Image 1 (cartoon, helix red, strand yellow):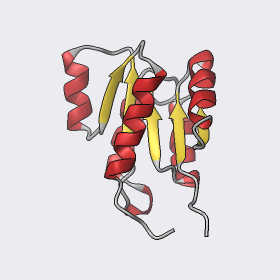
Image 2 (cartoon, helix red, strand yellow; image 1 turned 45 degrees about the horizontal axis):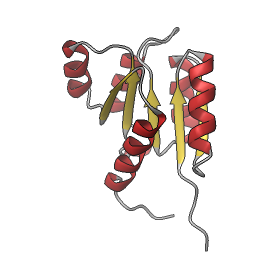
Image 3 (cartoon, helix red, strand yellow; image 1 turned 90 degrees about the vertical axis):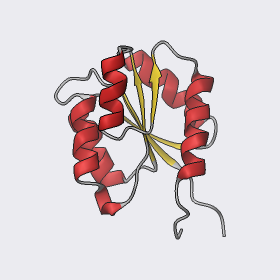
Image 4 (cartoon, one colour; image 1 turned 60 degrees about the vertical axis):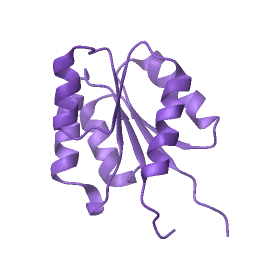
Length: 132
């Protein structure tokens, strides 16, 4: 029996950033789902149940903070879905807000794709084993 592919949602309103991240992450045999704004991200979190969420904060229609807050208040299927914030917001207040809203990792843009991949591997090592 083969192992199911890890599903990663990337939400970012910058089309070039979204495309580059999606292609690079998919090249590591992850299933990648993308969203261009917060409302689309939330809809895909609920419908597709990604294993890991990579979330920009400055997005239209619903910012990343609102998505993260909604996720932590109403987790789909009541399971932990790790969130990696990748944002240009580098202020201490943003890091603290991320901690308060239970973000699992925080990277500031610009960052290297290798840093994102390391964060993904870290999150995978922390996900409780689930029945596949």
